[in-house]
Amino acid sequence: MPERTMEAPHGGTGNDAPGAATPPVAVGPELARAFRDVLPADLVITDEVGRRSYECDGLTGFRQIPALVVLPRDADEVAACVRVCARHGVPFVARGAGTGLSGGAMPVADGVVISLQKLRRILEIDVENRRAVLEPGVYNLEISKAAAPYGLYYAPDPSSQQVCTIGGNVAENSGGAHCLKYGFTTNHVLEMEVVLADGSVVTLGGPTGEQAGPDLRGLFIGSEGTLGICTKVTVRLLQTPETVRTVLADFPSIEAAGDTVGDIVDAAIIPAAVEMMDSLSMEASEAATGAGLTVDAPAALIIELDGPADEVEAEFSHLTAICERHGATRMHVPAEAEERQKVWKGRKAAFAAVGRISPDYIVQDGVVPRTRLAEVLTRIAEMGRDAGLRVANVFHAGDGNLHPLVLYSEAAGEHDAAEKLSTDIAELCVELGGSLSGEHGIGTDKACSMPRMFSSDDLAVMHRVRHAFDPDDRCNPGKVFPTPRLCGERPGPYRPHPLEEAGVIERL
Image: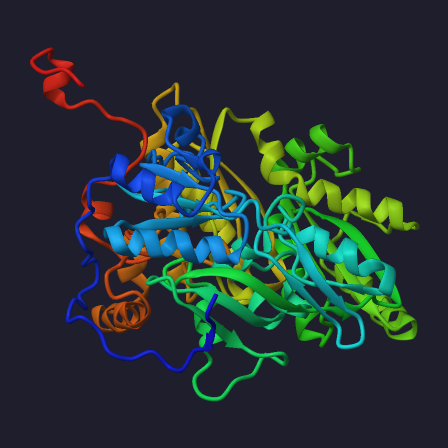
């Protein structure tokens, strides 16, 4: 497979307006045969039941059955599949574990899903240089497990780290509980092998994360699959901290917990993690895990310090004093690593556990300045009451990355109200000086909200950058940028036409 180091992209097609896309091409037996020329027949899925398994990611309200699904086994086969799509003028969507929460891996009509689930090898653990070389299907947690015997670990730790893949983390620039101190995926990826829309293979970054010219490595990370497909990743490994101290602190109000976070950072203490949970999320998580959360507490913070023992002990005393000053009603300090892991299990299980208290829910993702945490949480509670819906909050408080969970019942006809509330919360974050997404991406879910954060000129420039990599909009089209299809005819739960309800027409 020929490979080259990519220079800054240039050129374009003149098709630079946001939302412009090449019309889809009908997919038929000829395309299936073309894929079977480069893959074994059993790795080309054409039956409806098999294809339906890939119709959505973790945002299940948005669905589209793909025309075909292919399962390449290595980077050469990924490139070959992309070249087939290019020759036939067919769009494609790269998919990892499907754990995304913004509809970013949702297929497109008459398009192909290129699944990376078979590219799961850890190619190298370079202990001397503290690096790991990975295929995109490696689960996030597997990296730290492989590095642990050498006293190393991989810092970014999304709550879904047991099941989310490094390729998906690259696509969304995932963070996690420890991103306050250690940063996001972009701070830990050094180099990537990438297949572009025409099937060519390029290298972005380098062994140290640097390359001459523009930072194309940084540009690709967080691009949500719209610039190409990552087939190999070199990540930075860190030394396991000497000491870790954790406290689970309950507070009499969400506002008190939010103010505590600001004071901790103002005191020049940079915890490894500061997570907040409200009573609803703790109720669900405690029922699922028995982690020792106080379900009747209005809010709790999980705060963790790590580093040299003397430094951690000094900062921990200061930190607990700040919690006491803000009226902490209980402070539980796990004595053993196993007990600390139990607390973290309670936090990381929260998203899934909410299913115990609500038949349906939407996980939103936005960012506000830390100084406005109390204000935004108060506003979210008011918006929920006005909509007649409950909102559970569990999030990365240290960097203001909110994850409100809007609870609703599809059977009770509450989906539209829940979707509107979820969108309104994301746009509220922008209003308060934050952003639409911290780590889950824009995807399908928030594409129509992009003009709330960016001007038309901003979006036009972004689209021109995208076209430099993918002139024909073959890579994950219809995502991130607002388009008439998304904003006027958003995919999602089927809603019958009034004439259908009147019995004048019927659905085929």
